[in-house]
Length: 181
Image 1 (tube, rainbow, N blue to C red):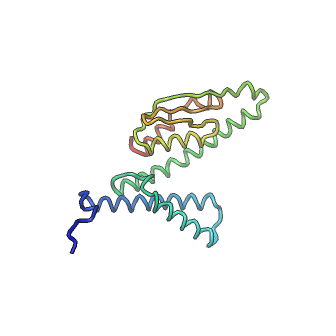
Image 2 (cartoon, rainbow, N blue to C red):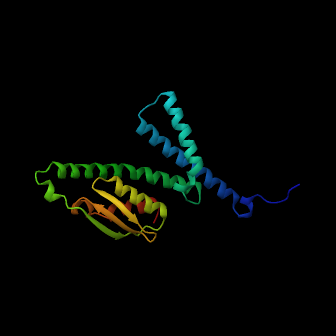
Image 3 (cartoon, rainbow, N blue to C red):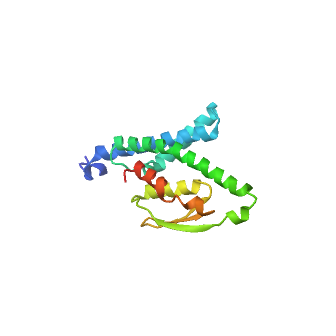
């Protein structure tokens, strides 16, 4: 008979570790499935089943990478704060698209486009929050995150001065709110 305690019991809080893992995987699965359904646009049995299987596989492998909170309730709150952030980000992407459209169709396009790199130090402290900010910047037309240091120094390529004038600004503030930083 083996009297050795399981690995989770030796760590001190097996219930917390198990519930954190379960809730992180569930929230990752839920968000991925919503994105799958929205972006695939197909709701027949084959595609929905393929989406469920794919999302389950990805969340089983890497479900604890996105949600790193210590309690299931905090993981759920993090997920809901992220979902609340998404419409704002989509609106910012829309506005940036209009700005790039204006630049492209302007008769003096060549004089208006003035690419440059801006640098700023972020106040975000976690890797997940910095990654979310970097991806949000890159998703916004007219800006691309070139690099992010481990200390939070961002380098961002901007198509013109107006595209980068709001960085870090409100986008960083909203990402900080998601992660309570």
